[in-house]
Length: 332
Image (cartoon, rainbow, N blue to C red; front, side, top):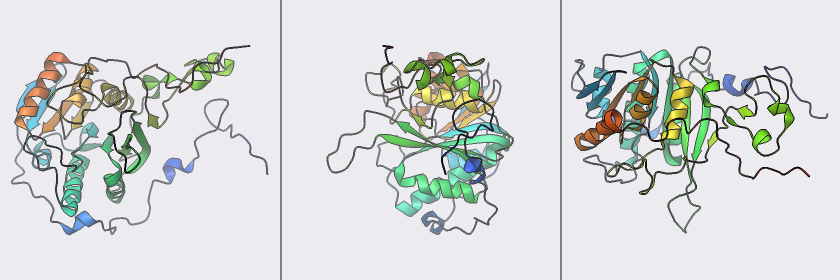
């Protein structure tokens, strides 16, 4: 049977997303009995549940930073069950010399650590909120399975692709990290597609009149689930975004896309691993309230300076660009 286009969706032309793409992520089956290696280690128990105050605060919009182990801090933050967007870029357990942090745990201990901070985030997330996790190949499966067994639904499994991978000769060079997008309620979530549009290949390469003559968003599309392009690479030493003394810094455009797509002005954004402060820097620039947690006092002070004094250096650079990998075709 010849293939046919499905035109039963909101715009003309192209193929619709399969109706089961998100529905398939919902599980009526009982998943809580799934066992992973980290389940063998004891759960982290906070020293108390008494609410605490942040170490740094500012206003317009409200911004705060807590110093400490996020497993200890998250249960003590007052905003339980009310955070609109959480973005987490945890330590990867790759023996990176973070300030004071043990980044070389035994595997089962690292998985338990991962499940514990994920649980803390889930408790903070509002019923309509979104949780994003930036994680590499060796832990992505465990994160996905834990979030599913906790009842969350995966909306997208995106990939951040960068051209400047770490050199090696014994295997293919790693050039990606996974960006997982989960929610509590797929039918009731914040999703601002018009805020993150990029130029479509149909427009930038082919000058296709069907897209250039659309009534709305001419020549534009929602970004694909593999993210790359100008300003999307790893933050190297000569990059003007670079915050020296911080490891594995994520580009501002990455956080800008997440913040604009999954939150509104005035919403509350949280990052349990502040690092160089990218999440709160972007959130603050776009008029979102934010909370972040950082283990290192030294890194926290540096991040706070960036969040409150320096700000974004590439505001709106994630929007409107083309990610085409070919030059535009010339008409003949």
